Every structure is written in C-alpha cells, then in structure tokens.
Length: 87
Image (cartoon, rainbow, N blue to C red; front, side):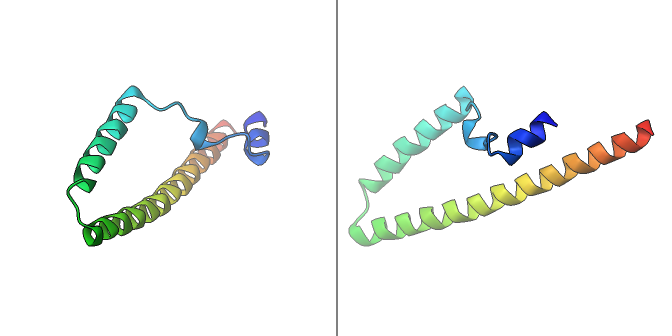
C-alpha cells in the first residue's frame, strides 16, 4: 500500500520526473526557434502567435490529463486481472 499512500498524500508528481537529455535538447531548440520567429513578427502577428501558443498549451494539458487517466485505468485493470489469476 506504500504507493497508494504516496499518491494519496500528494507525494507523487509527474513534475518530479527526471527529464531526458533528448527532451531538454528539444525544448532548447524550440525556444531558440520561438525567439527567432518572434523577432520577425509585427505586434498583431506576435499577439496571434501568443494566443495560438496559449491555446495549444491548454489543449496539450487536457490531452496529457486524459492520457494519464486512461493509463491509470488500464494499469488498474491489469492489476485486477492479475489478482484474479492468482485466486
């Protein structure tokens, strides 16, 4: 039950996960391209870009949450089925 205790008390967080070097490198490249693009935009284009990025971030967060819930449900189902096999 240790894992469930940790989950209940909020001690498990995806934010604590160690990010891979590949992920960090991709983020750095993304930021580099973002700054290059912003330097070429007028004010209206810049505002539209920021709005688009915010909307993309919102939809990405919703998607991540949905995937997390789905994965959790699949994990529980696997656990339930494996428990039935042992009985």
